[in-house]
Image (cartoon, rainbow, N blue to C red; front, side, top):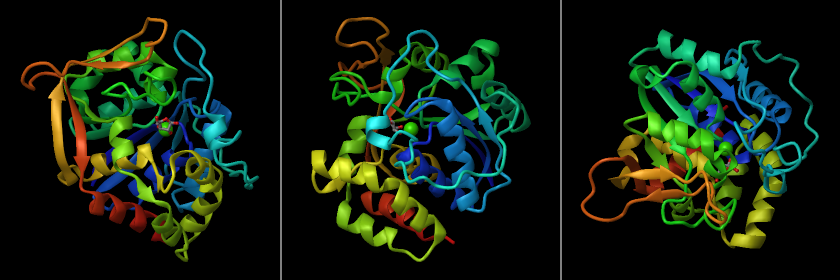
Length: 307
Ligand code: BDR
Ligand code: CA
């Protein structure tokens, strides 16, 4: 199987993405490097450990990383994900401990152990990856593929009018990462909005007779209600879509390669991703525009039903 390292800030949609990864026999999750984002690091680490327990993945190491952005503090997304990042269900915490190795160091070590084969998927703010790159700028040479959930490529932000959360939370880190990798497969916020999951279908999937589905039904309840109030019939799971792109690139229906710059300054547009849509496509980031919706839904459903 392909070694898969996931940098993540769980987070309700991160959790769904992790279940998808655990369920894919063509990939083996070699670690979870954890970052602050949706909520603070102690919660994102605790959530990662708990999710591994629920999914019977206790062997997957969890590496705690950065506790906040590189430069400027940013508010978290507890209003969407709950104060604990998992919908405030009061779940019984895992008895396991996280690794004592820092996420940035674990990323570098695993990149050596799996040089040329490693699939790296970033589902949170890019702080850990930026730190790893500053420690060792040769990291991209050993990563076979980097998939990032982040950015708002046509300017429809969610953190602010202009900025998507993962990039907007730590723009300096995002800039380091986007500037360092020659190739990035991007699942951005607009793609997320274009691949909604109907609440009725999601409820059917959550009814599956499996511990994963039961746990996920609980931790996602709050954010599903939050989303139904604001965005209507469809639920949007950014990190799940990014994981579909990572696990099954053959599901991509349309993508385009375009130059992308991260705006680190500005009064209204800090954290935005400025894509140059002029001229013919060529250099830059591979922006996923459309993914096979049926394949995406099948991956989500199977991940929840797995026992
Ligand atoms: C991204 O921000 C976070 O809140 C989600 O987990 C996802 O990674 C969407 O903008
Ligand atoms: Ca996330």
